Image (cartoon, rainbow, N blue to C red; front, side):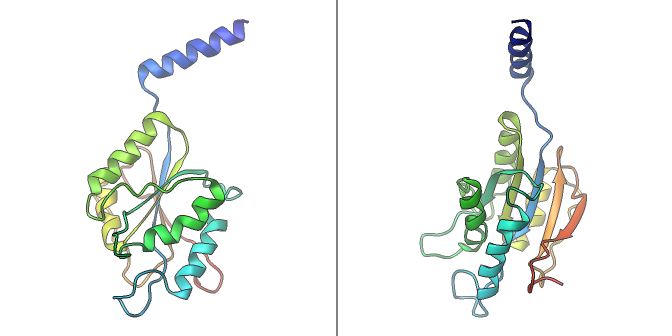
Length: 179
């Protein structure tokens, strides 16, 4: 009985003070694209990377992803690469990918992350066009955000709460794609 009362009190205190988890945001670029930039979707290598991410960020990975954000695809099929990249992983994790934010609405992405932190514990994976990743990190609060290399598709940026800096850049290490 006493333990139950303590649990209720602790729960109420966290509600009153505002729940704030110490989550980490991981940012990745969408998978490889076809050589013809007018083609929508992923190249065979990009599709392979999407499958690899199932292992990189999956349930046994230690990343503990419980929220995935990707830019909103257009109705004509353009801007669908980020969603296509993370959809197999999301299916494995039983997560619906949040595609609420438009490509250039970086404050929208930051708001989703901060709202997630208020109500849930678990890490966030963001998949976007590489040109926008710096802007997203800046919207989260990093005043010295790195630039994602044009020729790379394999980097994972780690930005732990309170999101003041990307503290680590690692490789997805997808076999046959990353060296």
